[in-house]
Length: 133
Image (cartoon, rainbow, N blue to C red):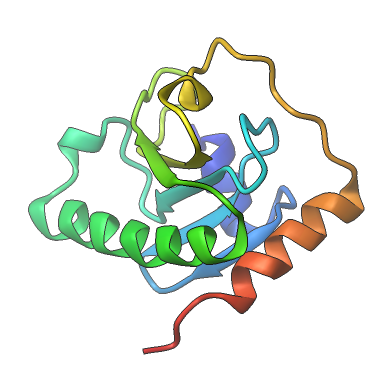
């Protein structure tokens, strides 16, 4: 069965896309902890991050680093927090969350609500900061 992320990747469900290549896609979390909260997913649906083959796993980490640098340039914060939980969607993914304290990446916190225009603005700000190297 296709995960919600597979449906996003295939275009069946819209998203606020940050970037993609042949293997991975980055898009804003629809229920963000903080402004700029981004999900990084492999395009091939594998449930558990640690079931990814080594090449995909390493590629996902490198791709996440690339996107994290853009988020940090676009969104004022001390760090980009990284989280892998994997319980809510059966598709390996990484959360990149702009943080100023460790409590900012607590998934028990209330999610922020953004308008369509605010999501688009954040996505565009991050996209503009992606290095093309």
